Image (cartoon, rainbow, N blue to C red):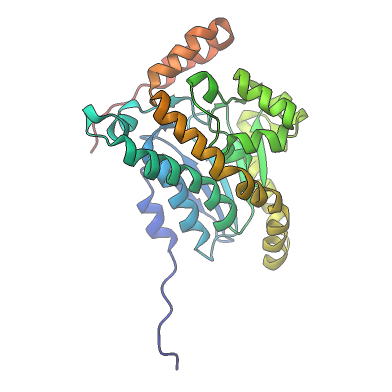
Amino acid sequence: MALTNWLPTPKFEDYKEFFKEHFEMERREDGVLFVCMHTLGGEVQWNAQLHRAIWQLFRTIGSDPENEVLIFTAKGGHWMRGFDTESWAEIEEPAAGGDQKRATYENMFYDGRNMLISLIHDVEFPTICAFPGFGFHAEIGLMMDIAIASDDAIIIDDHYGYGLVPGDGIHSCFMELAGLRRGTYAMWMGKMIDAKTALDWGMISETVPKEKLIERAYEIADRLMSKPRHTRRMTTQVFRRRWKQRIVDDLDGAFGMEMYVDLAVNERHTDEKVEEIIQARGDEMAFLKEGRKAGMKFERERD
C-alpha cells in the first residue's frame, strides 16, 4: 500500500461554479468542453479580473483528465470590443487605490504571459476557437489548434495606436500566422483584418455564417473525438511545437519591453481611449462606434 494518497483532480461541477463570473461552461459526456467568455452575462469588457481568470481557467481544465476537446468562444456576437475602465483603475491608478508597480508585474507581466503559456502548455488536448464578430486580444483564440471565425469577424490589434508595444503575444501570433511583412504592418497600422483576409493570410482555419459558428465548432470536435485519446493528444503536441518555440523565443522579452513602455509612457487601460481611437479613425470604425452604443451598457451593481 502506498505511503501517500493521490491528490484530487479538479471536478467540472466545482470549477464551473468557481469560474461562472467570467465563463459559461458545458461539457458533453464524451469530454467536449464548451467555454464562453462573458461580462455580467453579456459582451466581454476586457478587465483585470478576466485577464487573470483566463490562465487560471486553462490550468484548471488542463488538470481535469475528463476534458478531451475545448471549444472556446465569447458571448454577445463579438470577441471583445470594450474595457471595464474601473477594473483597470483599481490596479493601475493610485487615486483608485491601485499600485502601478505591483500591477505591472503581477497583473500585467505574470497574468498576461501565463494566458498563452497555460493555453499552449497546460491544455494538452485539442483547442478550437470560435471567433465571433469584432475583437482585439485575438491571440487568445488564434493560438488555439483550430480557429474558425464568423463571416463578419474583424481582427485588430492597435496596441501601437494606444501608445503601447504589442508585446503580450499578439506580436508572435500575427507574425507567425500572417507572416512578418503582413503581421507587422497590421500592428503598426492597427489594420482591421476581415474574415476573408484572415482566411487568405492563414490566420484562421475557415469562415462560417455567424448563426452556424458554434454548430460548426462541434462538428470539428466530433471529427477530433473520432480517433483514440492517445492519438488525439499526441497529435496536439506535435502541432504545437511552433507555438512552444515562439513562447520561448518571443514572449518574455517582448513582454518586458511592453511593461517598460507601460511605465515610461503611463498609458492606462480605459474605454475612453478606445473611443478616442475610434473617433480619430472616423468612418473606418463608424460601425464599431454604433455597435458599442447599442451593445455595451452594463449595470455596475452586483448581487
